[in-house]
Amino acid sequence: NAGVTQTPKFRILKIGQSMTLQCAQDMNHNYMYWYRQDPGMGLKLIYYSVGAGITDKGEVPNGYNVSRSTTEDFPLRLELAAPSQTSVYFCASSYVGAFGETQYFGPGTRLLVL
Amino acid sequence: KQEVTQIPAALSVPEGENLVLNCSFTDSAIYNLQWFRQDPGKGLTSLLLIQSSQREQTSGRLNASLDKSSGRSTLYIAASQPGDSATYLCAVRGVEYGNKLVFGAGTILRVKS
Image 1 (cartoon, rainbow over the protein chains, first blue to last red):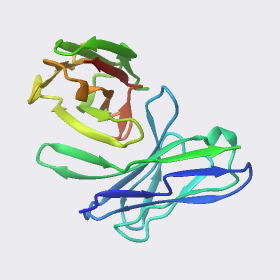
Image 2 (image 1 turned 120 degrees about the vertical axis):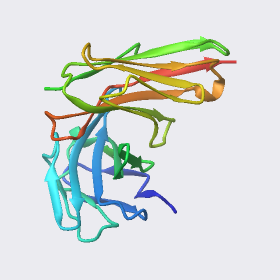
Image 3 (image 1 turned 90 degrees about the vertical axis):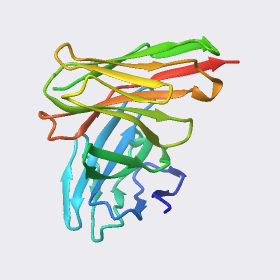
């Protein structure tokens, strides 16, 4: 299993440009998440999905959009990039087992908006 | 609103020392608490998950405790090694935030050889 994969690893955007951060998991997990991590801060939830076709906002959704057409993929779309969106973006997937929900994280995408 | 605080923000210790990382949270209505490790440029790896009904969990040289009523958790690392150098984050899953994880900012640990 590859686990959770994210592309690209690093990207520089100009203000006002758009891009899609890709996330895929091969563990057949229903739950998927997008977080952002700013320097010296914890992770903040942007959007999440509990299954294909179902998405919902997290704590900081403004400026982002998501879709979940398949169980495996959960892309994050940035429209009209702004310097405030400079951050490291993590995708995660999870399952609920006997001992609670365990999240598996991708390696992250580092985004710089200039 | 649930807030998670980790103290200290950074810690540097010589190899072989036992150490304690602290995590506090403001809302005790939680389902569980989780400790993660993050290596530079990498994603998070789950270390220990403690259910709200549990007092502690152990994995190898790691021991995590939970005092839900006082809103505190500690991660104890025994006989630290240079390979333990990483950022350690705690996160709580609570009733208030729709059963989603709320993260602390992390403790950056450096173990010197």
